[in-house]
Image (cartoon, rainbow, N blue to C red; front, side):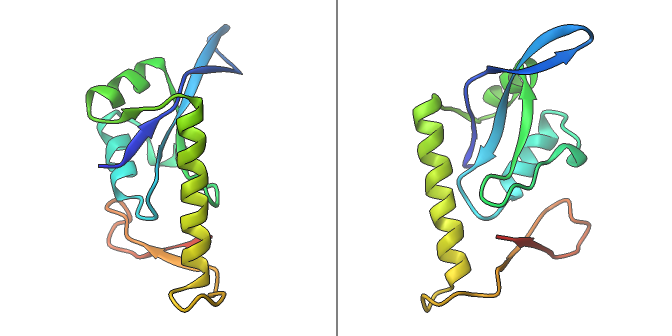
Length: 124
């Protein structure tokens, strides 16, 4: 399973009147199945998923981050996280170009265990 969490930082979140640190749950693969599976295990709702073009992720608070690590997510520092995000961005670009090196149609099919049997097309 290639699922990662980055460091907790202050992004200005305030919950119940208190500042809260947060981080990201993300993957380095085009296939988002493991990412969604981990999110489900730690109690995240699918509607909280953020489908950023090259950086799909879930935002986590400390307690969910701790749960993700207990369930196998790899902890990364900022530098390592940036390397993973950049590598995934390059992977997305290669997939968009297609195997022949030419620009594709901009869509990459991604299978998703929670898509209720439907195929998702994600704009890359």
